[in-house]
Image (cartoon, rainbow, N blue to C red; front, side, top):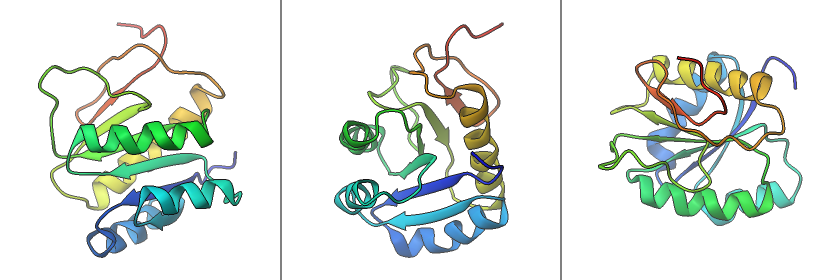
Length: 148
C-alpha cells in the first residue's frame, strides 16, 4: 500500500457526496464512488484497486447490510461506516471495522477518514479486527488488544 489509500465510497446520495469525494482526494486518498451496493460489488469483482471501503449511510443497520454483502467479495478489506446515527446499544455492526460519527461531511471528516484508513492499513494488515474500543472523538474502531 502506498501512502494514498484507495477508498471506495458507497452512498445512496451521490449528489451530496460528490464534494466530499473531492475533499477525500485533497486529504490524500484516491477515491471512487458507487451509488449502490450492487455497483460497489461490480467494482470489487472487476478488480478496481480498493484499500478501504467507506459506506455513507443514514442508519448503521443499513450500512451493516451493505458491509456484510461486500465482505463476502472482499473479506480482508477494511470497512468504515460514516453516519450521524449513534447506536443505542453500542454494539458493533457485522462486517464493519470502524464507525465514524459525523453529522455532516466536510474537510475535517475527509482528513480524519484518510488518516484512519492509513492506520487500518498500516497497523492491521490482513487481520480480522475483533474488539471494539473507543479512540478519539469521532471513530470507534475494532482492533485487537487495545491498550488502555
